[in-house]
Structures are given as structure tokens and as C-alpha cells.
Length: 159
Image 1 (cartoon, rainbow, N blue to C red):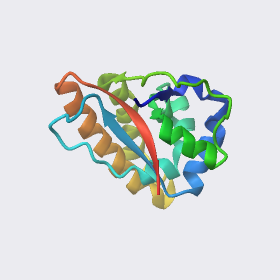
Image 2: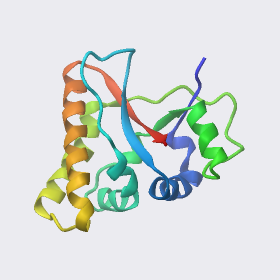
Image 3: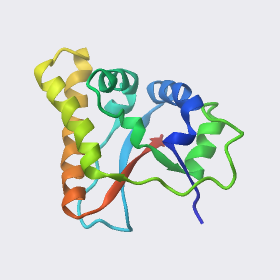
């Protein structure tokens, strides 16, 4: 059995998580509900992880949910967070079930960010193009997810 933790259980640790995303070879990736959604969901997500702080501040300015607002991870991911010093050892055991989100909600955030970076290509300096490329990948996956009537969440991978 895999247990999960959601964004709502992480508020005290989000600053540490965001800092770890910048300093580690982390990747933010999309998980689509079910065993196999029957379409490609791969998006690298490393540029998004490296720039998560800036993306969170921008999402706030644009009045959309931050990407980490769609985060939900399994117990193994949480154990790694603890090992890296970015988690809270007092998280409840067992952790809650995964939280799933509407693809349309995620598209609101992703499209707002895409529109901003398309209009402001120097916003993140040399990171703007990689971030924009990954956001467009997220848009592709979330549109397919919505077309299939599935839900999604973000997870983090460390390498």
C-alpha cells in the first residue's frame, strides 16, 4: 500500500522544499490518475523545479494557484524529503491518500504563466526559454488529461 501526502499538509515545509528544488537535481513531473493514461505524459520539469520560487511569486501576481499547489507525493518521496532535511518528521502516519486535481484548474495556472513568459521573454533571463518549453509540455499533457476526463497532480523526483 502506498500512502500519500498533499500540499495542504506541507505549508510549514514548502520553503524548505522549494529551496531543495533549486539546489538538487530535482524535477517536477505530472502524475495522471490511473495505471496508464494511454498518452505520453513526460515533461522533464527540471527548469520548473529550479525556478519554483520565481514561478510561485509570479503565480501569486497573476492570481492563479502556484504549481506546488498541485503537489501530492507518496510516502517514499516524503521519506526522501526527510532524509534531505526538507520535511517534517511529525507528518501523520499513515499519510493521507493522494490528492487529485482537475486538469482544467491546472491549465489556468499553466496558461497564465505561458502567456506571461511569451510576452516577457527576459523575465527569467536564460531560464525563460527552458521554463516556457516545459510549461508548454505541461499544457499539452493537461489538455490530453482533460480530454480523457482524468485528474492529475505534481510529484517531485530527485536524482
